[in-house]
Image (tube, rainbow, N blue to C red; front, side, top):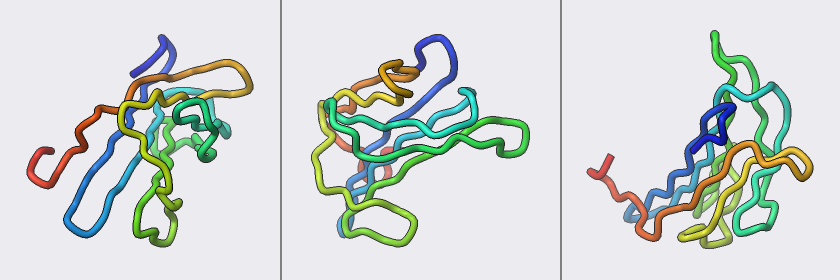
Length: 104
């Protein structure tokens, strides 16, 4: 969800052999932002110009695979913030029930 400037999404997917958690940001200034889950910084999201839109994403997965970070925390029910310093640009709460194949 957005806080007025930009838009974002956090999605948790449960599959038979993996769990994926993705945080996306769009239409905020290009740059690098902290992604905090439950108040703890879990990674950095880089927003760049893709085509005509500013966007970026940070992906976590277990088991981990190239280009993604290890999902070694439980984001369910946690607040997710995309922030620069103490300024939160995007914020939302991850649903308690993850998406499963066929839900999307």
